[in-house]
Length: 391
Image (cartoon, rainbow, N blue to C red; front, top):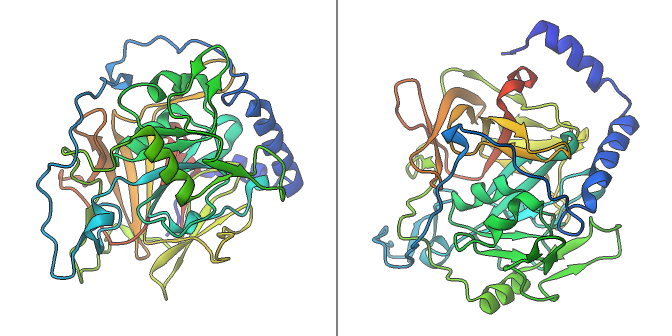
């Protein structure tokens, strides 16, 4: 099945017909314009004033950890993972996940360790490029994760939906206050931000390292050992918030979910400069990830990234200022499309509280079940639904 809007598609076809070198040059130019702003010489513009309460988030305080009543482990000491729905060790499942900002422009390819992330969020930043938030449950064997890149405030919101620790190398000025609040446990690659001050999440120069195989800022990496050093030095509590009860509704053991609204062997969620799309592989039952006209692979395994579920989540997005930084509404709800096993269904997403997880509902108000496994979430501006192609 194919969904297109004819007039818009004519314009979009003209855009995608640009020479590949031109697209990559435009992307690199856009990124270069912001490299010096990410936590080093950041602009100090003011947030656009608004009276719309849907864009406002109340601070979360008095977080209690480690005393919640949770699932009883089976005889093998396993419980169901909050990130994949699969049985995993109790120790891993009840430890806070690690959410890491990953560079996603052409000079950062291929990324390292990304295939180990159970959940990945892709969202736009400046200049029609995207950045990734990789959320890890079990990353104890990883000696190289990255390239790690700078923070935007809405990625913190997504991390907090999983009660994750948040790792970044630099930050836009609009994220500074949130990073330094009592709500966010973050691990920062930079100690100071010009015109703002010290970043609370800085834990030392040995948490991250740079390689010599690509130019900065596309060569900053971290590792499990480095992250654990940061956790120890910052004295972060690794127990899940007592109020945390999971993000997705997963299928039961042995159950396979499919949707009746239509089939989806090909998904183009947007027209970002990395040209992202997913192709369904019937043999594995997963969606394979492509961008820049080729398979997206993990440097450590040389395997293509693959996901059991893909979610397109439409959000209201507006500019913070004339510098191009984006303000993404992460809590007021909106439309969504869920894909699994070569099928899809339309949905709405809602949140019960500002800092709680987004949940996905059908037209009757029932929460939608996704299959156990890994999930990729595409954040797309709600006015750009015409970019979508499903075949």
